[in-house]
Structure formats: structure tokens, C-alpha cells
Image (tube, rainbow, N blue to C red; front, side, top):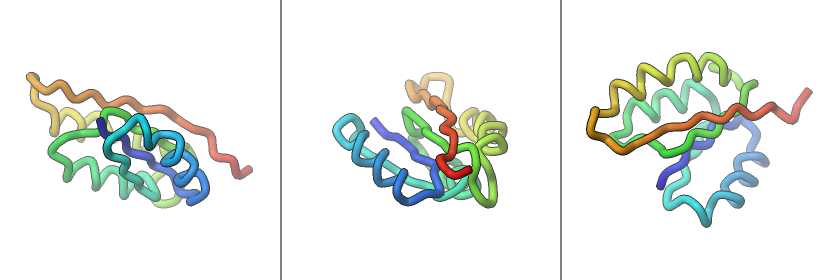
Length: 94
């Protein structure tokens, strides 16, 4: 299984990678929504789970969430067993 972490804070990236390393064979990390969208568009096999922050530079989690549906539809065939889930995480910075 594959997970995509979309988070701009390196400490949270490391924490999530550590927590998820035993559950996922492949852990991908994007620093912002634009990077994640580019990664998703280039993937043949979509991640099983997408964990994203809300507040990020370049493209925030809300905008990414809105654009994910079209990328997922374009990369998923009707017979595909891939399922991408999205979890919104509040930023720790205020």
C-alpha cells in the first residue's frame, strides 16, 4: 500500500513517516499542494491514502482537495482497485 503525505512542516513529515512506516510499503511526501497535484498526475498507481495539511504555501489543502477529484478520475480505470482517501489535518502553526 502507498500513502502520500502533503505537509510543509518537516517535523510533521518525519513524525507521520515514522508513525506510518510499518503500515505502508511506500511513503511519498510533498511539501505543498501543487507538488502533490503534480505527483498525483504523474502516478500510474494512485496512493491508497492521502494525508494533507490545510495551510500550506503555493496551494493549500482546500484547493488541492478540489483539484484531486479530476486527477483521480483521470488516473483510475473503472476496474482499478485503487482508492484515494483524504484526511485534512490542521496546521500546528497559528
